[in-house]
Length: 377
Image 1 (cartoon, helix red, strand yellow):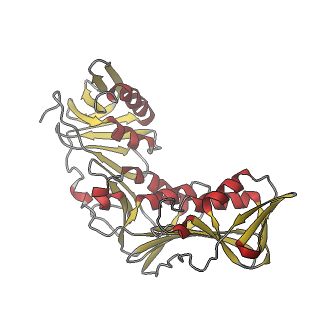
Image 2: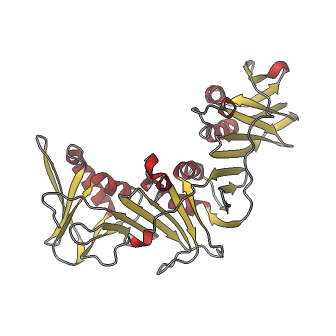
């Protein structure tokens, strides 16, 4: 194998596939990146057995071939290389020469024969969606997944297609950790398939990084019985699905709420972030109270102090209502809402609260309240 490519192309490709490489596996071979040549391209692949990726980048191929290169070593080298052409040449005894200007590295590679191939998902159900729409949907849901191994089914995001009851969307992402739930819907023209799959949060987080790197146009989504694949031009990401029963999220959505207020998103985010300074010293508890046409946000911690923020609101329904929440769960949602104003709905003292943008995308965020001495049923 003998190729040359541009440093910028190489670094971009290596940085993407390197994130997939497992550093904790008992199978050493998956700690490598697979280099394969095609006619005018270099294909890089990584596979941690849960998720895999391959991408192609432009290269001048003098001699075709393939080889495995240790990911950690390769990533360290490429990040330090100067701009310009970089050469790779596979020599005797598996030695790979990486040349640049008048200098070179010699590193040990491995034969590509035993590297696990990426599964090609059979097109059981497939559709296309605008890449940046999908990126926004992932951003607004993936943060709400669970990190607990005991709640494995909640460590993924539910992808659901087809018309929902009382919903205008035909494509939805839903995530919950048992304390909050984020749902983002979208109406996709021409989407006919009906499907449901739980995708690991890590896979969607990696896809989000790729999409936020400036990917434009449509991305193809293929859902199989055990895997899901995402393809955009020269990038192919595949992941195992989480097997299990996702909770019926429709049962969590409150049917009626006592009060509804409209408040500026950034003002509310800034106020809750300031309140979090005190709340972080006392179980992250912050109290929201609607009264007198204002929203009061307060927190207190013994031996530390207290804070009270007051925001002007537009409101309707019950003139006075209050609830206590984990402030982190509130700020998490506000940080992914890009609209100027949000609607906050509060029910009885121990009913869930609901946050959604006043205008814009179909996004609903539900957060469970906290029982406190001041807020009782």
